[in-house]
Image 1 (tube, rainbow, N blue to C red):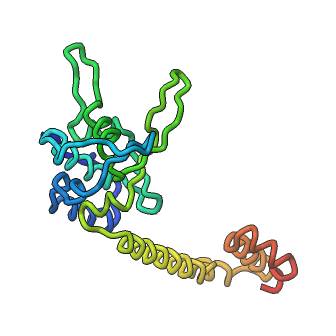
Image 2 (image 1 turned 45 degrees about the vertical axis):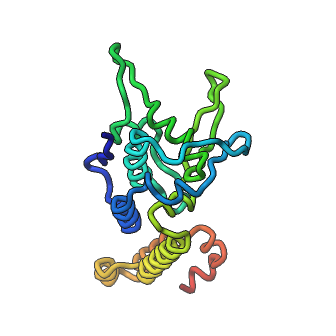
Length: 224
């Protein structure tokens, strides 16, 4: 049975991603009500696709694993899954090998192209390869319906993003309050006036952005 095993030594995931993964683990996403009520749409033609009432157990197991993997690698700001289908397949135990040693990721790729995308849980941006005329999924984006599988609404995601933006802005404001450290002040206090002015001038130049320096101008910088 496929199970998502996150790689070791990976950077820590955000609180929201951990929260979403816990929610997805608590609920059987393969048996979600959305799987019975949503219509499968062919992403190429827009036509409604005929489908069975429920997923077979093999695909259901694959879906449970790959949903966690997609969440783990999701950039919540862009909803982009920052992992290839091959990586998802490998880490979910969905890759298979023939007797000759050739690897196949069909179980993962078909789950995405034949179920997750037609059902509207993901969107794939496709790019033409140089070697062949075929189009293959290059990027996977999670949709609001994907998060609704485990009862996370778009408003909850927006609230998290808003809080993150405020946090980042607050950190930037705190960083901008001090442009000379206390250790630098001790050094400057022992310098002659000209050397001290040059030291402070260099600190101011590093403190402001290029566009801010342009607005301040040479005279404004001299006053500061």
